[in-house]
Image (cartoon, rainbow over all chains, first blue to last red; front, side, top):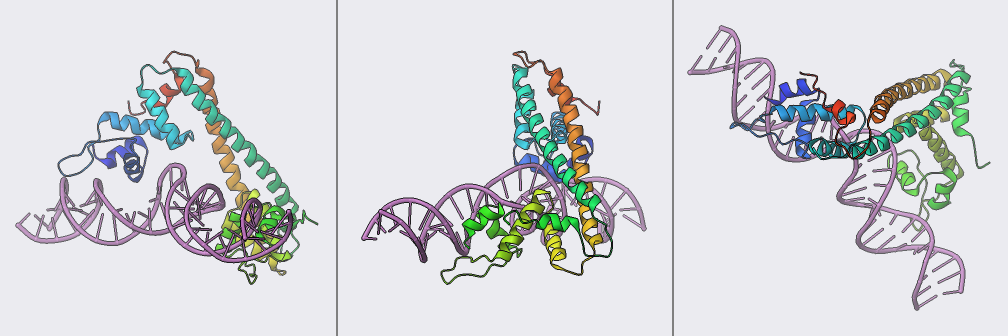
Length: 131
Length: 131
DNA sequence: CTTGACCCTCCAGTCACTGGAAGCCTTATG
DNA sequence: CATAAGGCTTCCAGTGACTGGAGGGTCAAG
């Protein structure tokens, strides 16, 4: 199968698939004309990657997950540990964004948003903590 | 004032301050020895940037915010519009992360995390949507 | 006079792609 | 059989916002 069809099936841009080959995540063989000739297993791997990336795993995490996936003797604990660490990172990120949102939301509500120059948002940003 | 002291006062690494000069956000004059000689207005600007960045504004947003801040004839509506757009982006990001968290959290809970290879996390990632 | 803490510039690397140029291959149509 | 459209190839450069490090100048204290 050519890269365009694989892209559709795996839900990844062709560019991204080439990039994944570059960094060694997939190794499709080549046809005589130089085109990548994807096998079912390659498509499957790419779909796996697509889903793992959609869950926010880094490329290196994905590499590890693929290795674990292909290792029939893996311990599920290893997968769980990785996923839990990632979950914590996501939760931290959410908390950080929520704190930004809360502050920003207050400021936006406090700002009249009219033609006058007076603006609580700028006032807050300019607050001199060293005064 | 030298960069080290400014870094402490503005709450930014010296490296970052040099970078901000590179991209034209601050323009401190130089001493005879080549050291940056920060004025109060530079420190103030950097503290402004530090807070705006902490709220997640992009550098380009910060550049605009600084311009608005220094424009006494600005309309607060312009600031509000920028802040609201940013707020929406943050909210989208939060929603996206929450969806990741929910899925991931379910998977983590479903995984025994023991020595056995059976793992719902990998099973989900490998789910063949083209079957 | 030396030591250590500053400061300087410049280059490279991060992460995960993405865009674009230049050129070959394939397929459909006239 | 010629051509045109579209798909494939490689390679290079850019994104955002820094960050690390090399290599070297400057300054204040003892």
